Amino acid sequence: MAPRIAHVDDDPDIREAVSRILTKNGYEVDSYLSMQDFIESLQDESKEQPDLAILDVMVESMDAGLTTYAQIHKRYPKLQAIFLTSLGDMIRPYFEDGSHEWVCIIEKPVEPASLLATINDRLRKTGEAA
Amino acid sequence: MAITEFSWDKPSSHNSLLGINGEKLKLSDDVLIRNIRWFITFRWILIAILVFFEILMLSASDMLAQLGISEQQKWPIAIIFILFTANIAYLFALDYCKPSKYNSPSINLWAQIIVDLICLSVVVHYFGSTSTPISFFYVLHIALACIFFSVRESLYVTILVCIMDTIVIAIDNFLLTQVPLSVLVNSDFLSENARRDGALIWMLFLDTLFLVVWYVISRLSLIVRNHESHLLQAYKQIKQTQVEKDQYALLITHQLKSPLDAIRSKINLIKDGYLGEMTPEMSGALEQMDFRAKNMSSLILDLLRLERLKTNCLDTAKSESIPIKTILKKCIDKLTPSINEKKIALTISVDNFSCQCIPDQLEILFENIISNAIIYSHEGMSIEIFSEIISNHQANIVIVDHGIGIESKDLPNIFNEYFYSPRAALHNKATSGIGLSIVKIAAENNKLKIKVASEPGVGTSFTIAFNNIKLIKE
Image (cartoon, rainbow over the protein chains, first blue to last red):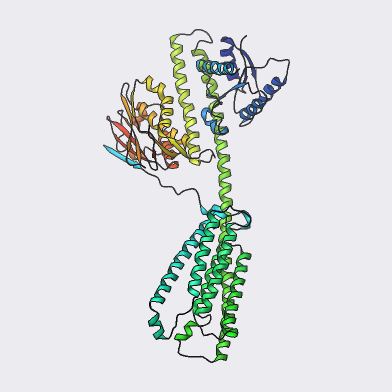
């Protein structure tokens, strides 16, 4: 079964680019405009849960991506996350101490090869942990 | 070869001003403890002086006896003993006892003042309360109380001083008929009544003086503390504004960079063939577009970095001890693609040491210097990174390239914001003139010295001097 990936970004061009790359490489992609939409879809039990979430950081507010992930991480500890942000490593200071182990940050623009490599790497880690 | 050198000495950010305890206008425990230690040292000196005089008195007792002074009293020895024991007790309470409700710096200071006042009263009594100016030493305690205590507490100390002084004068002149030490030397014996009147005036005069001194110094001290509290408020406001400014800069950077990222994401889609085949000409044009867009977005990020380094307000910007090799490795890992692209031979021979720095900033510093070395080198050239251990506490990291070099007239300006020489711009079209300003501020924040030596056409060497290092044995 193809891995399912959720992508949250308020920029339609980025959503389209990510969706195009992932679909072409055999992933199922659910794109969301806002963090709220994504959280609601997670709570909807009729929907299939994603294996990995790609989150923008500055959607709606400065740190929406980070606060959303903090919420999701508590409830769905198995769900992996990748932060895709324009600011790259500059947002690292905003994470709590000791989070360097699990936080994966990719700086925009989207580069197909490195995006796919990072996703595969993260999914393999989930597989190993399971 | 032209050389330019920069060093920065910034005062440490910790300031005793911040030791003020909110609105209560009382000094913080840290400030009190520092001064308690100073008082204790001062008291040791006093004890040493007393011991010295006591020895002098004992050895010269024959001579003093000839002058009519018979030194038989034991009070100086008692005073020395009390002060000595008390000093050890204060130190013990400060260093070995857990701070509690009954063992606070404030109580420690109170105990010191009371014991000192009692000792001083004994000294005043034996020296002569009305015939010598020794009573003026009480003023010292009032002044200290005004500086370190609140107005009310310093008033208590003043009242205590007045009471003690009154008691000593009363005992000397109205209760006991013992003749004080100094009167023994004084040949003019006053009549008993005249002496009592004089003592009464002396007592009133001294008590008034103590109260006036208390009023003046506590006023002054209150003004100073008010100013300090205003400064503290202002400091807090500045800090808050800096945080807000940083967030604003972050937001603006994001808004400026986002459209570029969307454009570049689409360019990447086309380049990687997700939107169909394209001709080599189209591919070349896309490369050029991407190059320009990339330069623009790195300029935007550099501006944010510069702004952040300048304000240096994030709480995460704490310095820690980090091994230099770890930092260098991180930078080189990041720069490997451009090193490979230019076929540059990189030689690194660094003895590992740890230094006290802000890791992110040190990384930015090295990344910028090494990246410049790569950019301004010609293809296939070499870059050397090595360390010079000067002593157990000092070391340099030197980065040498054999690139285009810097002209001597430009050298003094290279750390200025937005400066770039036409030669450099010709070699690197993407230069923003910010890179070395970032290096400068990062060095300033981490108290590092940088020395740059360069010769056009031969190359440039950057020497970064570290102080307070610890060598790491491998």
